[in-house]
Length: 153
Image (cartoon, rainbow, N blue to C red):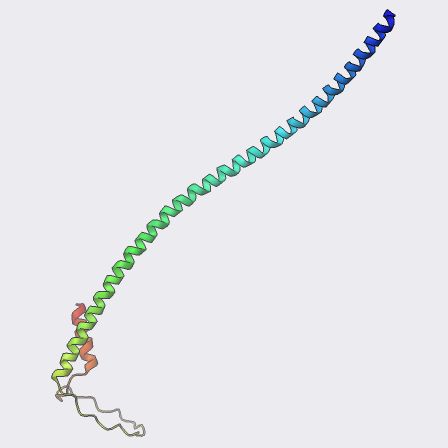
């Protein structure tokens, strides 16, 4: 009877040992899977770290470009303001010149209108040159040019 108990105990122990061995093999497989998953995660982490470093570099570059572009925008704004002031000054000079021209026109009577020239066939002789001593009124366009030249000097 003792032998039967011993054999039964041995069979139970063998069964437990086989179950433990089976459990040990399952745990080894799980450990191997976790190691491979860990290696995969480490690889992903490294690639993501590299991507983050690259993005940080791009962010820094974009920041410096932003500063440069902001400086250029400020320069363009200053130049625009200067040019607008210059434009206002030129408009004021033009208005003053037009006012002076109007004063000149108001002081001198307008010359009588001449009849429209009739069409004449071209001749081989050039038309006579106008005389400066004729005493005619100055050309309004010439007066404007003269006044503008004086103002710009």
